[in-house]
Image (cartoon, rainbow, N blue to C red):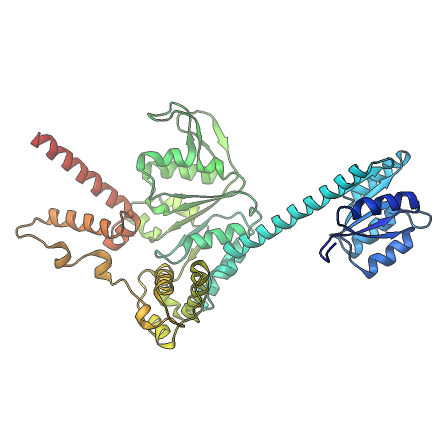
Amino acid sequence: MNSDSPRILVVDDEPTISGMLSEALARKNYKVTVADDGRKALESIKKEQFDLIITDVLLPDLNGMEVLKMAKHIDPDTGVIVITAHSSVESAVEAMRVGAYDYMTKGFSVDEIQMTVGKYFRFQRLVKENELLRSELATRYGIKNVIGNSAAIKHVFETVEMVAPSNATVLIQGASGTGKELIAKAIHQLSPRREEPFVKINCAAIPEGLVESELFGHEKGAFTGAIRSKKGRFELADGGTILLDEISEIQSSLQVKLLRVLQEKEFERVGSSETLQVNVRVIATTNRNLKEEVEKGNFREDLYYRLNVVPINLPVLNDRKEDIPLLVDHFVDKFCKENHRKIGGLHESALQRLMEHDWPGNVRELENTIERAVVVCREKQIQPKHLYFDATKEQTGATEKDFDFPKNMTLKDLEKRMILQTLKEHNDNRTWASQSLGISVRTLRNKLQEYRKEDAALTAEIN
């Protein structure tokens, strides 16, 4: 038996019972202490900590119920199993109502007691694993994981902590790379809905014809390819939180249906007339000024006001550069662990270079820069030579050398070449490419559809 063996207190005034229990539990490597009355049991409980108490209901002085209540008062996490005669099952049920884990009637076998005790400790392991998982989730997604000490980010923290316990709709606006999704997850994790689903949909990444189905689901046969019924994201998020990422890119025809969900909490699947009710907290994000999109006629004003109940505007990294040292320490530690490296932070000159750099990609760009530096560094500290910054021209490919423009190229051809080259530079990521080009994802998508039609027409003409 080792020192980590579970400690069990057996309380029974019958030597035959206590002896049998003690021997049976010792065989399973439990550390057993015996008390033959209630007062001795309480003395033992006050002196040392037990993982489990097995007590008879009927004792010569204090009864088992008093032992149970006192044990729970001293340590609420202590488990208690009650032993009772057939005539006192009612008191055993009452004991469970007070907090006992289980009860056993006298006449039980050695196998039964071993099985019940084993089941209790397996249950406790599951409880602890669940608590550990919750702790890890809170650490990963909780507000404490949003790094910063600047006045700008502190204001964001205060708003998140204020709005999280409510059911209010939140609109998070900020440039790409400022951490909008992280803030959304923090709001969910700090809310009463934390144990319910957190469902995300990127409105810019889903083909236009499939967005409605993704949001609201569809019935079998609703359209070509709908071979079975499917729940939408709103149904999947019922009881929890849905994140509508890049909400500014949602097509105008769906904005009305989305408004209805926000107002009435109901919708129909594509191809169905049945109205479904949902209880969902909505968080929306955008890297555009949604008010300006309303003024341009690209976004419904009524939907904007429904989403903008609680606005959170995330600052760009250049507006909170005093947070860079904290962010750097966090990312160095993170990537050293992931890559099994030992690096003693940044040299002062390297940190100075980070402080002087302009950060168009915000915190995401800083994170990528530090990850790259950790991977390539073979010294005790990261030096300036280990830092690589993507210049704007390198990001967009917007140089004459990169495009190698032929003479007499039309403006339309130039636009097409620039769009396709920029898309290639960003590995076909339309969101990043559209940001580099200064256009919306919707505009980029329409341009690409136009190019495909032109190419198809040219192929048909040649053939």
